[in-house]
Image 1: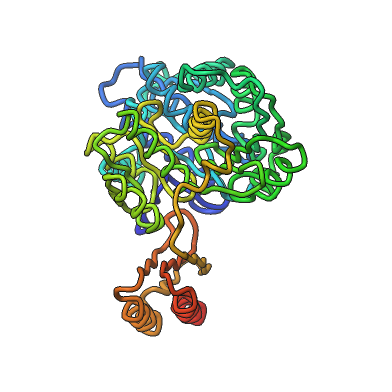
Image 2: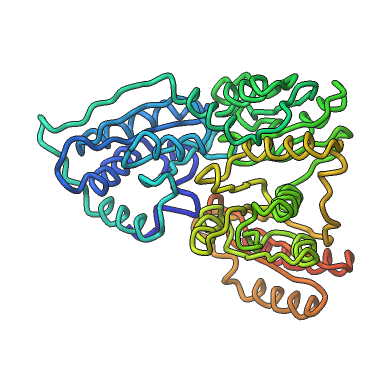
Length: 447
């Protein structure tokens, strides 16, 4: 196997195309089962959750077959958010957690994410070991050692209680009208339930999954529906989740959207005031806006940057002992409450800020003035390497020279899609767009 199986967030691709085929999923299940059942005992267990994609049934069955063939006992949770799998892996003393989801991607895609026994995503080192087993073939167990599979119904209820317990012990949400957009995804039952049980008047949208409408015209990557619903119903705030509910965008009462940077800025400042922010630092990726960094510096706080991917954010948080981090895209990681990004919990922290301050959402969603930023995505075909093209490299070098001392430029290949992301920040909007436009044109020519 020449291509790496794992990307920045597990294995992902179009369903029924390599690597997201049932045959590969079965082999992955066997490989990861062999890795975690390394002592020959038959009391090992794995929890499997999924979002609402039609292909989830196929991959759930294939993974179960592979895992049980290596002696792992499987607990099937059904549709639950990705953070629920991380939490339940730890609380149910499982050796492994698996989430079947392609997050914010369209319904034709799917993915497989893994969590270790501590509830955190697997490290590169562990993923490499699993890839070696996958490549060499996992040995199955004798017939009398095959694992069992059990479906349980209380997984989502356990998660709802954990989410509610993350809400500060202050006034409940009584009197607060909240729109929650569940993207027709994994949180379509748990998010409205948790908000209602905390006292809010809930207006749910994106809660009618049919297997093919996940993230379609709704959710954190398509916030128009949520924004329109907030304004139409005179709601106080909107919470827009993505397909597996590990991302969130907040919409104020005027229909204005706040991204992950704004949410992290608000939480970091508030947590620093109450002594809750560990290490006087926020961990975010290289994509986060320069305005966020300046906002933190003005308050004596630091922004620790990582590579793109919430897994790398979490790894840096654990190394440094920090408890708040995330991504501009809406992954908000709060390790006091969860092991990975949790959109619903982050949304509750924003609601807590509204309740405790008595301020409307519009006064809390704009923590800082962002530096002008532009991000353009360019698709390429599998097997192409546009960043190696001489013309592209020359355009990047020229762009860096033009922005030197005036802004910053970031070009990277997505770890989950065949896309080159070209991002720039600069106070001079015209210069910034000219630089990005030139680089994008060269990439498009190369592909």
